[in-house]
Structures are given as C-alpha cells and as structure tokens.
Amino acid sequence: MTDSKDKNIASSGPPVAFIKGLKRLLKPLIRAMIAQRLTYPALQELLKRTYVEVVKEGFHSNNKPLTASRISVMTGVHRKDVKKLREEEISEFKPPENVSIGARAIGLWTGYARYLDANGKPRPLSIKTDFEELIEAISKDVRPRTVLDEWLRLGIVETDEDDMLHLKTSAFIPRDGFDEIAYYYGRNLHDHIASATHNLLGESPARLDRSVYYNKLTPESVKILSQRSEELSMEVLQTLSKEARKLVEKDRGKDNASQRMNFGVYFYEEEEGDT
Image 1: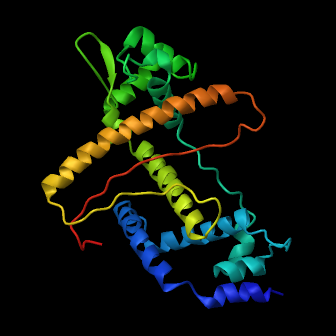
Image 2 (image 1 turned 135 degrees about the horizontal axis):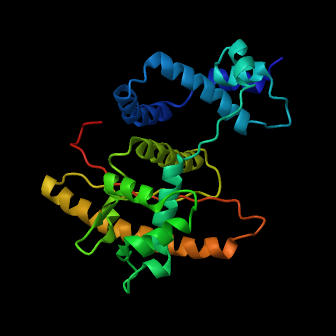
Image 3 (image 1 turned 180 degrees about the vertical axis):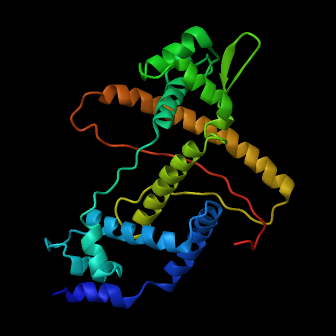
C-alpha cells in the first residue's frame, strides 16, 4: 500500500513558476547534451536512474520503508524498473587522477606561503627544483614532467627565457582537456544548483547564492565589467585559497574533518531576449 501523502505528491503537480525556472535552467544543459550526442532516449534512461538514486539518498522520512511502490509513486518510474535500479550501487563522483593532482597542486601554488611573492601572488617557479618539489609534495607516483607537459598543453602555465614557470591565473580551468572540463562542469554546476535548491526549498540556514545583474549595456561596457570581474574574482579566490590551506593544516588528523566546501564565481553576457 502506498501512503496518501505520496499520492498527493504525485498528483498535485509542480508550481508553474518552478516549471518556468526549470525550463530556463535546462536549455544550456540540453545544448551541451546535443553537442555531445546525448540523445533524448539516452537522457530518459539517465534520468530514470538518477530519480531513483536521489530518492535512495535523501527520502527516508517518517521511518517508513522505502518500498519499490513508494519510489515509483514519488518518481513516476515504473515499479519493475525501480526494483532493478534500487539494487545498483550509486557511483561515486570522483575526479580523474590528473584533475585531482592538478587541483591540489594549484591550491598549494596559490595558497602556500613558500610559493607566493611579496604581494601574495603565485610566484614563478623553477622547473627543476620548485615545481618538482610542488608535485612530489602531493604524489610520489606521478612524474612532475608528466604534469608539466599536460599543464603546458592546457595553457595553465607558461615558461620564460630563464626556464621559470608562470601560473596563468586566467587559465585555472583548462580549455583543451575535455575530461578536466567535464569534471568541473559537473562538480561546479552541481554545487551551485544544490545551494540554490537548498534555498528554493526553504532549508535553513540559507546558503550563499548572490549575483550582480544589469541590462541596457553596450558591448564596450560589458567588456569593461568582464575584465574587472575577472580581476576581482581572482583576488577573492586566491585569498580564500590561502585561508582554506591554513585551515586544512589546522584540521589535519581531526576525527570530524570530513566536510568539503566549494566557492565559485561566474560571468555571463548575452543579447537581451535570447533566453
């Protein structure tokens, strides 16, 4: 038997305002899906699995057993599919190894005092000593030269005539490595949407989700604001990275050091009326 409350959930329908907001959210996602040849039937299968995963992860309310019938009513997924899918393990979202090592290395370079100049900015590193030390501090299993070659390919660093490495702060997110881009695409959009969903559902305390919006601007003015936002955002990100690095060291070894955080910024521009 299914609970009458569950039937109400399935039959009442979502608010119109939510549907409008969701449609706007889906458009860039569907654009990416089409570009990557993810068809509608394939998306249906992915959605089916994800609906069941979300219920398994977070809807164990009122101490009621999470039966296949209850999940089917809540999600609209056929009960036979639910029985099959609920037995599957939920795959953990892990970064590729090169992404994990790269992100940690950039975190050290931007947040650890020995790798900063007098102004607190990432200083140039010598390839043979500083950079090798940086990578070996993170992993002894990866050759520093392998990381360097990949960073050069992705445009994360550049070298000068003295063989010194310079971190290109405007290239923290690679432009050419698809696995890296896809990982950050999933992680960062997930975290932003999760915070916004937390606030939409009225959960407490509210999470940070702020933006600055203006219209009626010329392309020239938008370019000025884009450049300024990049300058300011890098200052904020580097400052927070330094503080986070200190706290990571302070919390090392504590039993309750199990939390993660993510703070990001974005800039978007378009012709009015495009979406």
